[in-house]
Image 1 (cartoon, rainbow over the protein chains, first blue to last red):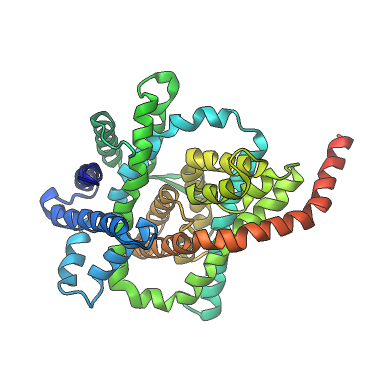
Image 2 (tube, each protein chain N blue to C red):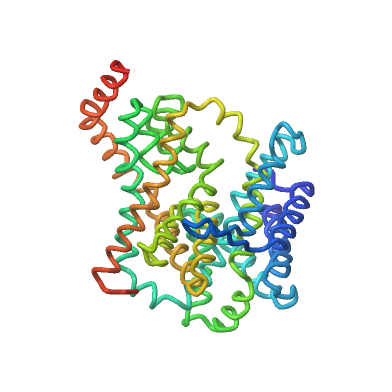
Length: 149
Length: 269
């Protein structure tokens, strides 16, 4: 069946995150399980929609939209879903992601060694630029509208 | 189909997560500000050390599987952030103006800062590929389609892509910590800024901000997630119809001025 390896992978990552959530944030796996099942289900449905629908949009949009929908006040049982998913600390979910990022580090190292110093400098400038300018514009927006200050 | 299943990788990740979460958050006061180290960073750094080709612990295949899993694992994080958005829609609407405007910063920021400096240090057409966007996968596809992957523009984009993959998350985490400690910006402004459109970078920056401003941790995740989502949704279109033409236009205008100056400087030296 299509996507079966993706579903396995999400379940494994979910299980790892539940353990991290337990070690780092003292949430017992039993309390965290329903929320994680919901998060995995939302993600799998997002992938399924992307696969089935003829409109080609990035999966991230479907996953976000579904998560937003089932937790918004118009969805029946949204409060239960919000309560269950709030047991999963977002930091605990990010730790395995960054672990995968770390483990793929060596892959690009060879290519990196062939790059000149200029491109390394510019890549740092590019990442600084996008973060700094967006932050600056948001800050100006907040000060002008008087929100959050 | 991309290969995803590897018990070896999953067991290493489990071990990394347990160790990282066990160490927990550590704050170091360096006098100029507090540097927060947190589980995500340990997992990233220890993982990177394990993957070093010299140590021969992971094969090329293992690392490719880790990269493939990374590509889809971020969706779980996106789902979690999405569940924060549903109950907070009024709050997001309320910040709508800033949320929309700051996207201009995300897309313009790479060009405004990157292009002039790239020209000053003597880059030519590589500068266009390198600075028109943050050069993640969708942006690489745009450049490859227009110029070819082996063109100067393609090489510029690929170079930034490689650097971003290797050091983007860690660099932006440090930068986010510095800006957060400066006191110039509201935590929510920084959170929106963190929605740069790359999963691991956004996750790491959000983590750093949430630790520095623990009382706003949930709002930080909410707004970083929302900004990241907008960056992703409009990103491809903006890059094709706006970023790339604007970068090319500015290149034509700026290169004769800044490019020549850099050659003069080199001659003098």
